[in-house]
Length: 399
Image 1 (tube, rainbow, N blue to C red):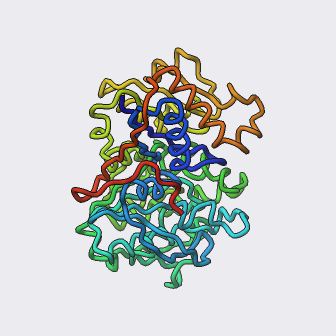
Image 2 (cartoon, rainbow, N blue to C red; image 1 turned 90 degrees about the horizontal axis):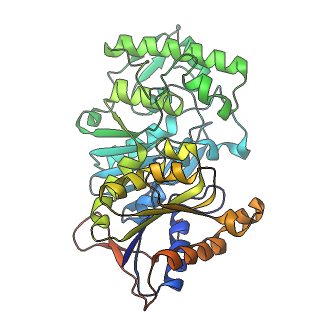
């Protein structure tokens, strides 16, 4: 038998790469004869670069501006002419100094700087993983880093941050990096919020970034004014497009100005990993994440993995910290069963603290239910890169 292990992270305890390693160890301990291919996945948010590196992409270091302007050292992932840039690791919430939110002034400029680095390196397809953003600036910072010029009524460069946009007088796109014209930009986006209004970027996601009710009103008005300027400069208005409000409006700027397309994050990741090829000949897929709930079914990574496996006729089970889904809801989404850490340890705090060992024990239960015992033979999953390159499925987390 051959098993593909394709989990997302257990947020707060294990990365996707670590989860895959623990599941693999548990399966092999109970059923040594089974071939196991570890292929961690992500939904296009934080952790996407780590997943790409585990699948054979190369890390490219970059220093860029954090959400409040401080320089941060991070990396993007590259394979051939494809680049993956992750907003969370450049200017996301985890990059806020001392974790202090700055909803009015946080900027996406660092994302644009990282994109510029990918352009300079000769990449012609750039994937933007925009989950975990700290800003609500409509992507103005990203565009500024790529050569756009925004000035106030006195002709002075506009300061960074979403709140400042209310004072913007004009947008000049003539200085945009000319290499953008020959680049295919794809945005990993799993929401359908417009840029402005009660379901927009500020109203829905601003409070998660520290915005008060007054801040939300300020940011929403600023985004509306920014959308006016972008429409005037480009000749089209994208503020009401589904997904325009993702990442504080970064997706709005990417589509309206850079000609980007939006795709579900898990679909992008599965394509980059050539997941369908790994399903060929597989007898079982094990996926999962920290919590299996209704949000999982709304397009998160395990649901995408289950859909792909079901289309290929391969049964799927999930491992998770806990689940609120009934067996009927799981079955409707393509999961034959969910195995939860809380089935072994009711104390959630302990589940988080010792998630790795518990996950290995849980995976032994999966093997006992689904797999025959025998002698070990660990396979490798061919990386979706040049012929002959492979990734070892027993590798640990990339740091």
